[in-house]
Length: 483
Length: 144
Image (tube, rainbow over all chains, first blue to last red; front, side):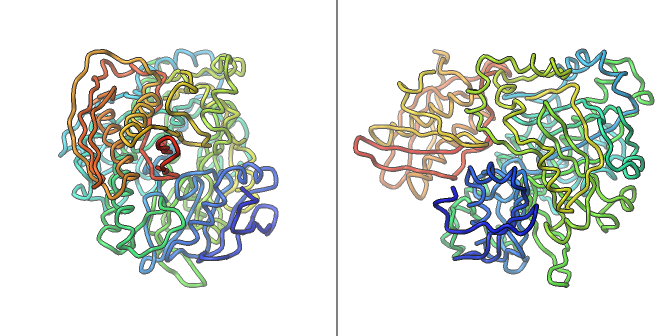
């Protein structure tokens, strides 16, 4: 809270605030926000966490916070931190429990008026077919050997099993596979925890959403991506499930126990980390890559399942539905990337925890299709308002290591959300706005009700004004499944 | 659930779940923390009578870390074996080791706990374990 702080916040311009270096900070903090969002950011400990992250060895340039920032553990959610490979550290807390939690968006050949009369049946069919909620298990049960192949191959594994098309890989970050994964760096417990969770949605804020393009902001980019007003879309938000949670859990515990040996002083124990180039650092990055690949496979499977159910539910052929993957982004990950720092190209370990990569036009990591336009950046909002498609801009490379926000960010705790929605029937309220929603958990709708989140439009506006990514289109929901 | 009569309560946290647990002694803190986590995961305090037993041993560098390891073990048993904690006999010693004989039961069907919350992990964030004038208090945050 502001009164107890060891640091100050200094406004730089309309969308940026700095935490000047003080005490043990190695770099300044940089918070992307505006005057309307800042009060919520200051209410919890997220500014303190930006300050704490700035203490980590080898951190480069700034400890960064995007406008959807909120209190996480150790690192804030909505944070980006990049580290020098020789001097710097890697931290599981800077990635998050749900390794490669991310979003994918597919477009269809359908218009809103084609789907809205059948939305209830469609959502009910998807809800029945897609395993979601606490304790849910998938239909894909793999032994250790087969799961190891998923860990190595990512989305490619699912495609090899007939769940999707090879061309999908061109529309997934890193072609649906983070390199460097090795099964031997992943424990038996993680394999145990993940063995029946492939093809499951998860719970809480994970969702499958049928939406439509409500507004287009950049028609040239939208057209090049095949977007049109009223077009029906499919959005999936899910991650590495118990497999990734277990990987994070174990490496956090190991690193916390080893902190005395690391001789790294930390303002917060949950920033537990290890040198990137140490055996443990390399082991974590390898395990993290494996978990990331599990998540890429998971989202590929979920999309394929949704496609099959959709075609059946509406009596459409694949050619009539024309479901195509626009892009799949990760928002909890650490990547080794090339960046320009002080005019020199360097390799850095970029941690994005609740942050999405946003590559500008002609970036070498872009697939051919997006080379001219830049990368699609997918920003889901809450289930009542809207989500956004943006395009990566050059400002991201110079300010945030090629990153943008990942969503809206919570403003109410789950407890507070339950208190405020007591006696309310959120499903009916959504239906009154032509949104049909189902959830596995009985409390989920109330915990996840729209006002529990920041207005994503405000968050995206900051990203747009700051030049990190530009608005291309806005999507409104028609049908939602939550876990 | 009546928060005033229970030995644990929810504290505010914007994104995750934070609990505060009270107990007369260390063993009670461990038991009450386990009950709290189970209550959150299952969404209920009503559990089956039929009990199975699991035995395990853990050792950590501190009592605080042992508490996290204890909850982690129970959480793993729930997520992988669908084993629901009910009660336990515990021996905790000065080497920060715990011998646990845990009583519980196995979930009967996948969506048995529709009021429950999926916990991703038991974190070290904001971890507290202190002596008070009438026993002990602990605080734990679960990532959800």
